Length: 113
Image 1: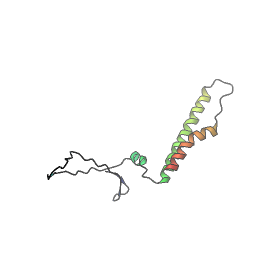
Image 2: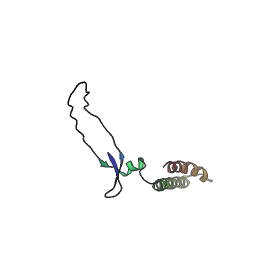
Image 3: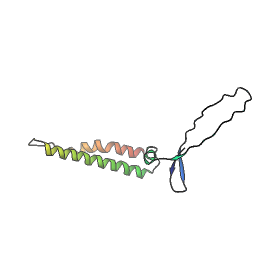
Image 4: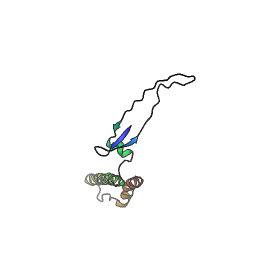
């Protein structure tokens, strides 16, 4: 049993797996003895993110931060390319194309969250 620890006293059950092991098929009057064991633990942050347990605002913020990091990384690669380019006219960065590629997936991800 996996749960989301919301506060010190409140827990939200997120996932439950039931495993039936050592099952004995009853064909006649037999006293079958079964043991019930329950294992539970709190989910990690990444498990909670993957199971969509946070509010939509958190996912919009998360995808926005990812997009900004990607955008800065692309700008750094482009700036490095400008430094090492030996051409008289270095390549220009196409911001609209880059924005479409970079912001598209996180926007859809935030919308689906």
